[in-house]
Amino acid sequence: MKDISTEQAILNAAISVFQKKGMAGARMQEIADGANINKAMLHYYFRSKQKLFEAVFLQAFQKFAPHVNGIFNSEASVFEKIEEFADSYISFVIENPYLPTFLIQEININPDFATTFFEAHSAPDPASFEKQIAEEIEKGTLRPVDPKQLLLHLFSLCAFPFVGRGLVKGILKVDNKSFTTLMEERKILIPELIINSIKA
Image (cartoon, rainbow, N blue to C red; front, top):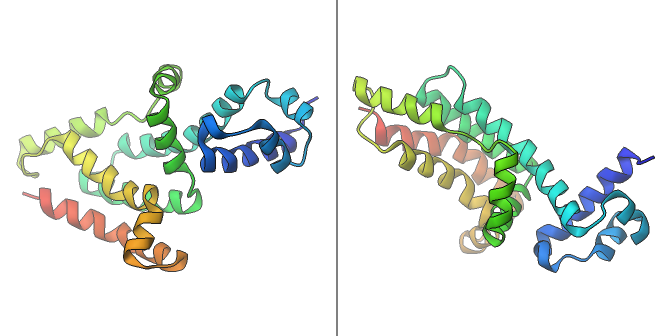
């Protein structure tokens, strides 16, 4: 019988290897070594590198998607959702720093896999939030803005520093501790910036 702790050790090792080398550059032996098991045991749990990659991707996605959907579909106001998204997303990624890079890297490298994956698993759906934004524009509480552009602003401002972490740290000349402090500050700065730009 498969052991849950061994399976998670494999997934953790795979996350590390996939993050450093991507799907194409990863080697099963390296993942087995990282999990402190032999290659035969690795194949017992995951028959192929593709199956292992899909399991890692799914685990990452299952952490990310419900988290975002919960915000989009809540009863909160547009401004509250912007504030909650920035706070929750940044807190979540600080705790799971590999996720944005891993997800975006693999979606860009293998768009066919991403298309198939999203057909089988529910991706974050901002439709209700977009509708809410449009309704508030109609009421006159928000300035006219394309809801998709607003969402793009929100995602970009929150995600880029993590996706481009090495670049950001190099340009700003900050260490890991200072980088985290900057990200914590962005929980307030990003909502302020966006809200002030769309408030009627």
